[in-house]
Image 1 (tube, rainbow, N blue to C red):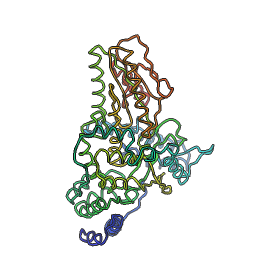
Image 2 (cartoon, rainbow, N blue to C red):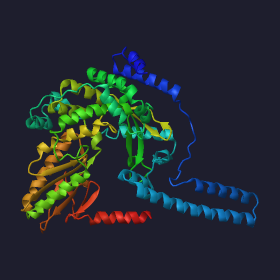
Image 3 (spheres, rainbow, N blue to C red):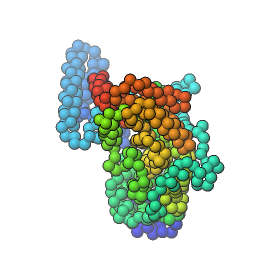
Image 4 (cartoon, rainbow, N blue to C red):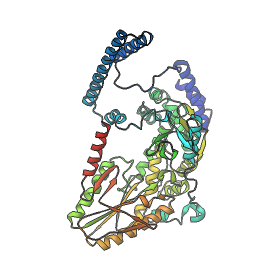
Amino acid sequence: MPLLFISVMDIFDDPDDMLYVFESLYNNILDEHSPLKYAHVRGHQVPYMNNQWRSAIRKRNSLWRRFVKERTDANYDLYKVQRNVCTSLRRKAIRKYFHNKAEGSQNPADFWKMYRPFLHSRTGSGQANDILLKEDGNFINDKNVLADLFNDYFVNILEDVNEITEMDYGTDFIEHPSIRAIMHNKVEKETFNFDLVNSAQVDLLLSSINSRKSCGHDMLHPKLLKLSAPVIALSVSKIINSSIISCCYPVRWKMGQVTPLFKKEDEFYKKNYRPVTVLPILNNIYERVLSDQLSAYFKDILSDFISAYRKNYSCETTLLRLTEDWRTSLDNKELVAVVSLDLSKAFDCVPHELLLAKLKAYGVAEHGVALLRNYLSGRSQRVKVGDKFSSWLPVIRGVPQGSVLGPLFFNVFMNDLFYLLKGVCINAYADDEQIYASDKDPVKLEMKLQCQLLEADQWFGMNGMITNPEKYQAMILGNTNYSFSFTVNDTDIPVKDNIDLLGVNIDKNLQFNGHVKKHLHKGQQSN
């Protein structure tokens, strides 16, 4: 089979043509040796169902049907006894299921996945199948209409945001403050170019595919790709290398399939849903190749205070660093002022051309920039609601959702903010930023932080980001009678006794009591 793939693909130079041949041959082989079979799947099956309880339910239902036909006391008594048997078996099944899972689970992710549906009743895997929206005063449940409504909303959510173009800052944004800062702080090193890959590297990546992941619009299932890794690795590596050489990213790998998932507040309004994008599995393999190479290059360039989507960094390490920094300042008899920022649709706001200009300024060669420009352009998405799909719409802004490269691009895009701010510290975990400073003099501390807050706000504006000053939070640590005041865009930032950081509530005494109480209360409510 490998020779069949390679001999036909070698006729073509264009990566799109090569991918078309690959998918056609791959699907033909699957249709012949592993054809699709359709089966009726019973929905909403509880995970603790067992054979004994299932048999008891069937007997109970049979007795109920008998009673409906012959409404006698004897038939009803038989039904009632069996109903109680079912109730008893259900309780035993639930107890046994959770006991076994709690005792046998070594993976925290598996443990959370098991308990989450019982703690959050408004979320679940079947949620996207049962959406009801209110639009222009009318309720809509037609899946085709819902899919088109969501897709139009997700694609055009930032249509009023001003574009940042080279017309304002010169060729390659050379006069943009961010590009100037990058060039001024740039460490001399060799320019970056993407290397070609071999079949062994691709085989390793294919073999590491998570079989439980969803497949993209191409319907190439991850489990089958993983099983066929030794056979298809050479063909996939040829497609990837052709793309790197020609600077043309396969169009079918730039097409995302989106599922709307409910976030919070009123579930009848589309603004309360977030898009979850699934890209083709083979695209993710290609992106892993590019991401691994780019990450190695930017390892020493990215600030240590950028913590998201990086090896050896996490929410835990970020919270530890923040709290220990603040504790050290307090031990030195200093006051600490913290402002937590809020950005809207940060990943969707990133302007492509400015991102590419930053990559070039950091040292990515013209050939690499050309490939990444092609990767970012010509992207499209459709929305899936149940078994219905919207039409495809173009995506012209932001880092690609659901991609491997997207988080790295966002970190690179944010990095020059750390060159700008002086005399304060800034921490960034994805779009969750905190600016903080310490000083023994409360007046100096207030002036220092206020000045840098305005600098940061100006940076966000020049880089196409949307800030929400009304959602900013401030907190003062240490003993003082001074009344701190911070303002951004004529909006007063409230100074609170506790703030939320990366999903954790922490108070001015560096205690987590409020966070613990909140989750204890939530657990009690779920019972």
